[in-house]
Image (cartoon, rainbow, N blue to C red; front, side):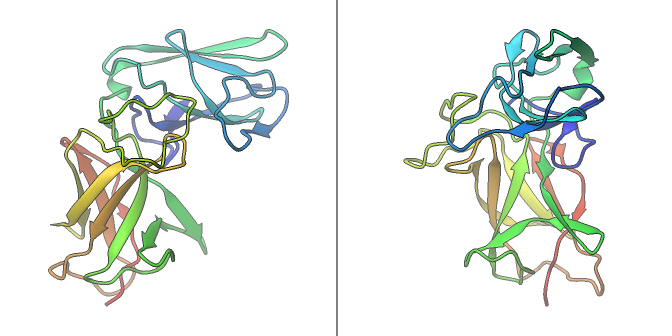
Amino acid sequence: MIASATDGVSAIAPGAIATIGGLGLSNCTAEREAGTLPLVLCGTTVNMNGQPAPLFYVSPTQINVLVPRSLTPGQTVRISVARADGEVGIETLPQERIRLTAPGIFLSTSNGISRAIVQKADGSIDAIRAGDAGVLYVSGLGPIDTAVGDTAATPASKLIRVIANVQVWVNGVVQNTFFAGLTPGQFGLYQVNFVLSPDTPVPDGDRNEVWLTADGAESAHVRISVAR
């Protein structure tokens, strides 16, 4: 089983961070070291239509990968996982599950409740108020305006933007989105910067929602902490 690493259910897109779940995927557990995104961890490799997928993490039951950016959306994808001892597992991803854009929002969980990770201008992860700028960390926003190697970190020397038209919605109101692109210094992580509009209604209780659209593709609606 493969799905977006953001919510475990979304479709995937080239350049997205995805999670593969199963049994016997690796003979040991390991995660990438700083500075690189390897193609082999614990002797385990992942290929998608013959293209190697860089690895964030491997264990016997889970692998986190970067979906190769050169994959073609809308085609059936053959995923093979090979262990160091030669055992190979194969899964076929139907063509409707891989799309040009497949936005998903990364979440944090506290007291059993999952909410969108929103970083404010001061670097804190806290409730956002009208007029505040915030950063959402996301996956699956599709093609970028400057090529970055699959195993390379996003350079900090220039901002790399996505080509898709990306919008942030909070409680049904479209927000002022002023950047959507790769996060400098990270591997395959996208971010979306926005300002919370004063016109956004804030219902009582924990009933505030945020979602993204990217060229019409819509993410799951997830909770967001909004303060009056």
